[in-house]
Image (cartoon, rainbow, N blue to C red):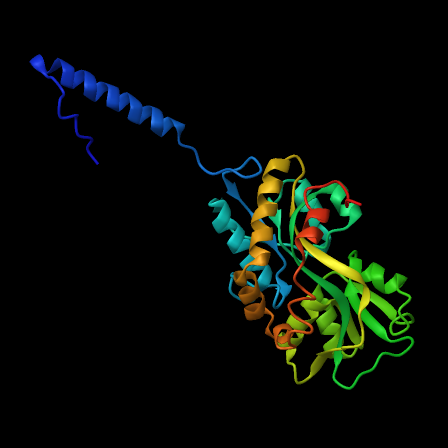
Length: 297
């Protein structure tokens, strides 16, 4: 838009007008130079990593689009940060810390459980969901000693299965695999009798495979609660705190509840005694695990 000169501008020989135009041009140039792109963690364009094999949380089929609750969380974050993003990256469970430390990605939103060891290596900016570990089986199958159970190698789920004192699953035989799809293949072929990982993941998988054939056992709850955080590189605590605030406000909102129910409908349908109270983290749980080198006491 063309700027209008003040009404009382005096223009003998055009000199006052030229001076005014020159001053305004200088101001416009200065303002233009002062404008900068939104930045996060030292970049004006960030890349997010999701898992590609977890229906309900983060999944990529034959198209290149990711879907799931984690993806909805990522989209909300990008909107609130008002920052450009590159194409999302498909990441395996065992690569999440390494990708962040090597600057391969800027954020990991991939059912990334916060642990004291991980907090020493990367930062977690806000907790957006919590869940316990469970067990998925074909309908009619009960847990028994020596039962072969697949889980993801190098994850909390593998450790919890091996360390558990829960009498329901204490004597199962753990078969770790690199990807969830490998576990699914084993289950469908009869190589294992169950898959054990976080309940959020299992309910999404059950929906994908067919609820008429599979079930998440209601009496199996393994270990302690897992808290999903947004992983990012260390060294950007101010940005971490900013992102933590965005996540905490989102979790308290109806948007969080709608997004969760849309992507994990089988959990939402279990009713108010189970959801959302068992999956929505409190602000205190988020504060205790966010932007720190270890959990606060």
